[in-house]
Length: 295
Length: 295
Image 1: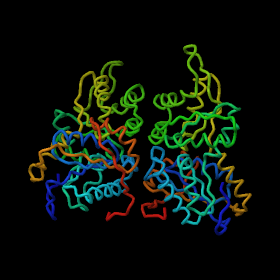
Image 2: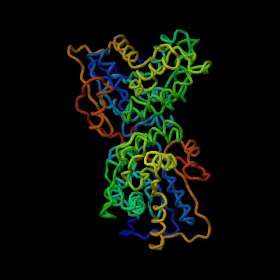
Image 3: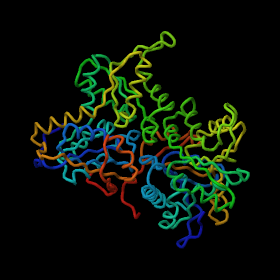
Image 4: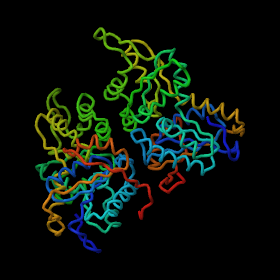
């Protein structure tokens, strides 16, 4: 987390701001509530413009700035970018324009992957935007001189998650096709193939919904279990360490509150968000990001 | 087409304005160039906010208004809404706010479907927004007291078209699943099922890319061919008739020009747009719809 700020010191009582293009980032909120239970959280899902992962870096930066400004205007003490695509292409611009500590999910995810890979290559499933940016390759290189990354864009998994098709023949075939580049050729027909990766990173906040299917298909294809890494938990641990080190942790005795904001369809967001959050939600409020911003 | 306008008469020399959430509407441009070859066309694809089909009616209306105002500001003589979702939920608001003749694709598609259905029910594949709106049901009811509509939302076909997976096992399974409600129960295992529809409407401009697959799967499931209707041609014929009747047809001796505008990624739009247009494109220009509008 980028904790060196020039301006005023934020208050420890202020909430954390978390945003994503839609509801995937709630997996990060879930982990934050486990590991930073006293923190109040404001979550913003920009579902009127979801998905970000197929858009150009310029457009993603423009959209991310409106989300970040909305949360800054609501007085958050730090920003957690719970979206791999935004974390891949927009962190520098967000840090340049906002006087707040900001963390993404790529560096925490890369750190967990380097630990899990046992010195082997790291397979990353992500959106087109995340994979094209090379952000995981850069993050892994900065943490370990040795580890190599094999990136695979998996855009249909986002569509399948939103359609609610998380099991059955179609997601199985789609997952299998996306995992294929992580394995060597089929030397003996019908026999397991050599895995070219030591772990697989779920490099999009939607993908934990396919975690079991991915674990299963990696075993089917390679004949043995391979670790599957989700950056949400590592991100929450990084945020906890930052809050502790900076003296910004909330010391209230009660559990933190959760406020949910979306840019479209609060009712349908409420309906599916529990799946990502692993818990019941409060009321979801709709906000308009259409107004012009400083960005 | 709603041709009764209160304001100034537009010029016959002006271009037609056509818009869609992305590149699907180019199938309508294709048909317009076949049937109205003298017309200049400005096409706008709002691919920075694609897809519209999963968003709320309010958000679709808001986005459609920015597209329509952009084209109106460029001096078009009429608007063709080449998007089923926008045509389903936003035509009234567009007509209220813009002093231009406006046509959508639903009524032309419904007319072609009533003609093709032979008095049987009409199956419609569309986005969630189009199917939920009931727009085809209303349009069919207004044309024929008898025809009934069976609507099936098919959002994954949009994602598959954008991923370029138009053939193979995954799109076959997805198409089959979406066509299932158009057939009666499997009375004899392995034998064709009774079709409950007399035709199927491709109620989303992305779906003509799956036309052959849908034709094939309808035959596989039902044991006989069933007409598959694409509203693009009927829309172009309606526009031609309107231009003739209103005296707004362009009388230039040469073929009309085509100007392409997008809100994101002009290069990648150029790359795939030929598939929809069935011809080579000119240069694609990027425009910004972020500025506030009268809407």
